[in-house]
Length: 260
Image (spheres, rainbow, N blue to C red):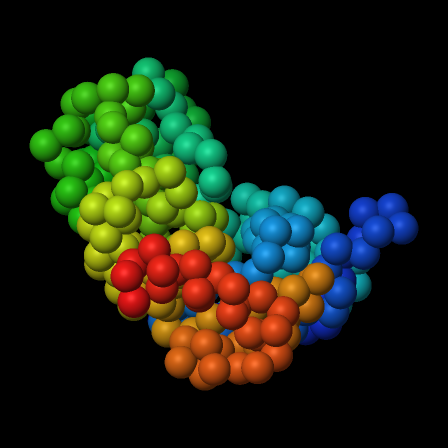
């Protein structure tokens, strides 16, 4: 874990596409080991913010720091090597490879292995052991030799989580990890995320408020490209500014759906 007080620090981050400003001075300070959910209405800029943090988009102004080091302007693979990994809304798997092979692909580069035609993958014991360890963590060890395309949807999402954490990143970004899951699958998946990200810093974009309140230590509320609140769930729930802008109607819908 980093000695720096913040695992991830955004300072007055702005992003414009042409004349349209999507992120309008977002600032956020996330401590090592914190689990943070980013919520907000559609069009608030949540996915754009994730893309800025992971280097998929470049920021217009401001700064983003990972464990104290600026990552503004760096390429996604450079940011990944500095200790940040992310998943996407849409599963991004090698569907014709086995579950084990998908995880091993993620492990190899992080362990320093590069393309070399004279090396046999079966002989890379440390990489294979690490891949098997990740499979046990995501509870897919019994599906080790199954092609990714033959997994259930929830299992594919679990495999994607495994790929995300396989490289040992200290900061993990999950983009709507429970989207499309049933209620029972979501409940199991929240527990899985908690287990595999133990000791790591976690940021997740999530619409399901049950997931948000079941997973997050803190909630960041993004509205029109600005972080209007960042606090523990109870404080965010009670924040009049948040209720007015977004949360009140969402919580009412959530409580009705769950019989509260």
